[in-house]
Image (tube, rainbow, N blue to C red; front, side):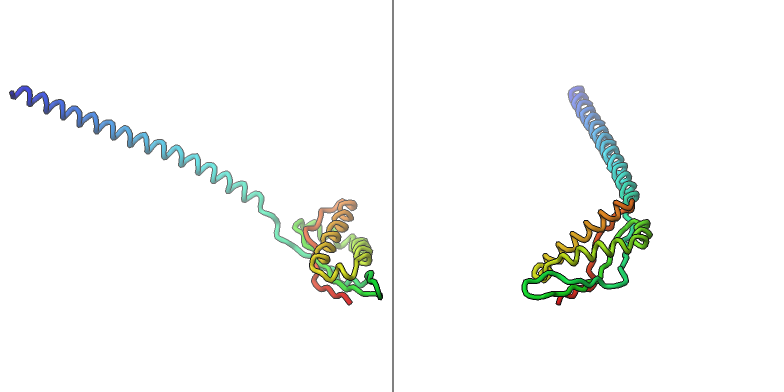
Amino acid sequence: MRRISDMAEKKSLKTILIAAVLVIVAVAISVGATMFVLSGSNDEAEGEEAQAETVVPEPLQYFSFPKAFVTTVASENRARHLQVFVALAYRDSAVEAALNTHAPLLRSRLLALFGRGDYMALQSADGREALKAEALQVLNDTLAAEGAAPVERVLFTNFVLQ
C-alpha cells in the first residue's frame, strides 16, 4: 500500500511542479510581450513629439496701415462713404520688410477694392467678411507678384460706413 501512496504522492508532486513551471513561463512571456509593446509605443510617441517640435509655427505678427482708407461706395440713392483701418496678420518675419517696401502699391490696390464696395452689402457681417477675403486675395496676389510671402489674415480695426 505504501508503494501506491508514494507513487500517488510523486505524481501529485510532479503535477504541481509542472504547473508551477508553466505559470512561471506564462508570466515571463506576458512580461516580455508587455515590454515589447510598450517600447514600441514610446518610440512612436518620441517620434511624434520630435515631429511636433519641428513644426511649431512662428508667432503671429501684425502690420497696420498708419492711415485710414477713405472712399466712396456705391449706393442707390446717394453717395456713401467708407472709412476703414486695416491691419494684416502674418507669421513669416520677412513679410514685414515686403509690407513696408510695397505699402504704397498695397494701399492703392486696397483703396481700389474698397471703392468697388456696395453700401447695402457692407452693412452686413457677411458683406464685411467677403470684403476681407477679397482684400486678402488682392494683397497676396500683389505680394506674390513681388516675390514676397503671403499674409495670413486681414483685420478691420475700425470700420465706419455712412
